[in-house]
Length: 60
Image (cartoon, rainbow, N blue to C red; front, top):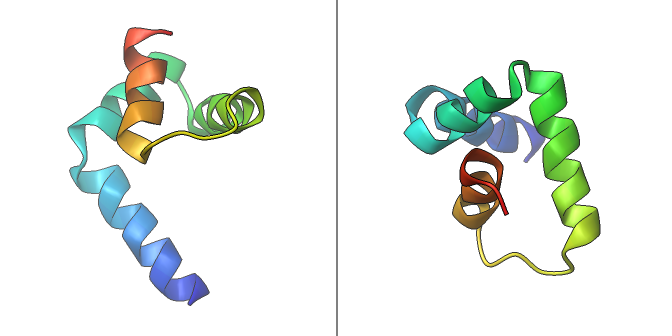
């Protein structure tokens, strides 16, 4: 299951323009993942990963 999750994550990173824009916005992966973690702490529920990435790219 972990390998499958890793595969899905890698495909998303390579193919998702929104993820790539969020990574570009943050400058590095570590900063992006810290921001993602921060949003999970701030909001109890997010409807989708797309919403989360849009918050990062376009602001909240």
